[in-house]
Amino acid sequence: MSFVKKQILDSLCDQYNQYLRRDLSKVLNLVFNEIVESIARNQRVEIRSFGSFELRQQKARLGRNPISGERLEIPAKKNVHWKMSKEIFQKLD
Image (tube, rainbow, N blue to C red; front, side, top):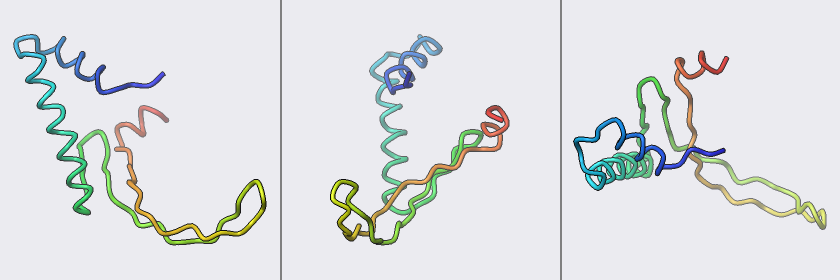
């Protein structure tokens, strides 16, 4: 089972029923968009008691086609790395 943005919005609406759903949706989208834009600017994003996000460069490498066994070059790419906070780590451990 996955947890999606709609469920976050539903939870916010239940907890803060004095605000309109569309206003809470705008705030949620604003927060997510700011996280994405910060990562795109190669800035580290840290959310206390949740974790941190940062952009990492993966080097180009040689790979293998699993069907034919043929060698091919996999180009360099960027990945988003998430590191969980100590609080989450302790809850999962």
